[in-house]
Length: 198
Ligand code: ADP
Ligand code: 5GP
Image (cartoon, rainbow, N blue to C red; front, side, top):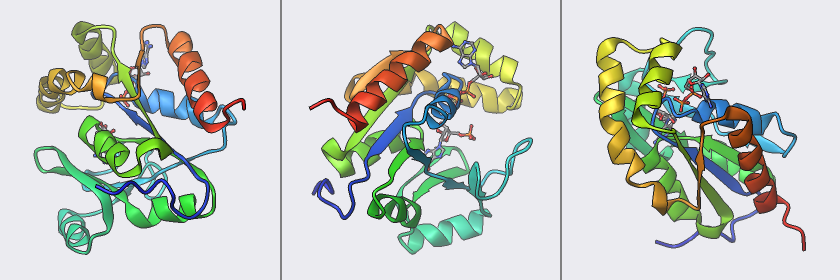
């Protein structure tokens, strides 16, 4: 596949992927607040909003019919049925608009989606894999977050070992045991990627 490394504008891509519960949203929030000039790629999905989530901020929330129509229209750079019946996708228009104006974009996407974006953008993208310290800790974190039903929880945990096996396909892996240490490492890596010292 052709790499889009020479697209208009000098914006770069930072991809953060991990099994659900490993801490990627926490990491993405920390990176957005670190003053690195990153802009969040707001994905589309067909699940209902959770807690205080707002349409257009955490996600663009669509019905299943709308989502499937948008797939047909080629609206997505990548999309996945991340869990049975649950669709998530990166909007081509969002990303290209930001990159074309020279902005850096950060993605919170599942493992397959992350690898898919990396494949399309090559060296213009940094793909980070957030690894939980162990499967047991991953389960504890998901249970403590209390955002999924028991059934959703077991689907997410079932998928995790498959996802962890893909970690070495990423540019770097960060073990999220001590949050402060993991955040510091992520900031260091992203800042070296975006602002390399000549
Ligand atoms: P993801 O986006 O990968 O599903 P989250 O960022 O929502 O994961 O993190 C899952 C839960 O674990 C959250 O409640 C978060 O506060 C907590 N968490 C994240 N990193 C750590 C860490 N290093 N130590 C303890 N708890 C953590
Ligand atoms: P949640 O429902 O917990 O917000 O997200 C579920 C999973 O979908 C997470 O692993 C999240 O990273 C992933 N996800 C969110 N947006 C996208 C996207 O645009 N594409 C893909 N492939 N996965 C996404």
